[in-house]
Image 1: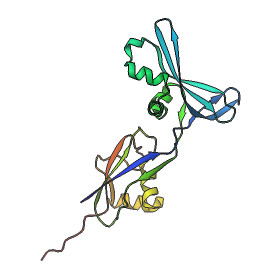
Image 2 (image 1 turned 60 degrees about the horizontal axis):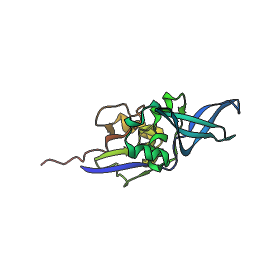
Image 3 (image 1 turned 30 degrees about the vertical axis):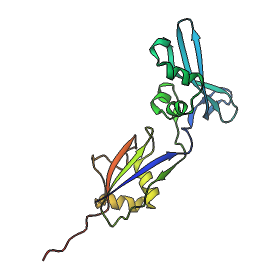
Image 4 (image 1 turned 90 degrees about the horizontal axis):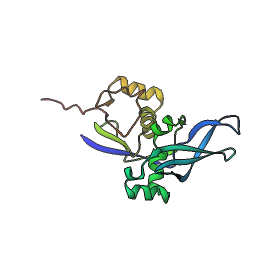
Length: 191
């Protein structure tokens, strides 16, 4: 059995959907790439700043509230102060954090990188994401394999695509990774 890995590479960060007071409706907010660190006596508040894509109104997504600076690794604290790009991405792609802050996470722009699969050969396929994802596995598979919804459903029904862990591939989201079997085992003729 051939083993292949596909990696989801994100071209953009998660778009954030929330109500904008200035616009008077739900709009898309975009990450500014900047943290705000505010010291209140012995405690810190740390936010990731977003801007409304329509009117530039800012919104602060809370990362830490009233945290003692001694409870943070000094290197991480420095990364907040210097707006470290990797740390920004880590928090900007965190769906749970956005939900805790009362925002909806949209779907970022992405591409799927990995070698093509011959669906006539049995292949173990591992799809991986650096961040937990809201991307549906069915959409990723259909997109990369060039399948219509009907063709994808037929492959599921015939067992030509199946999840190793048994999750429902029509409904499941990627999270960090999923392992699948794609294709059919070749039949060997017996004498």
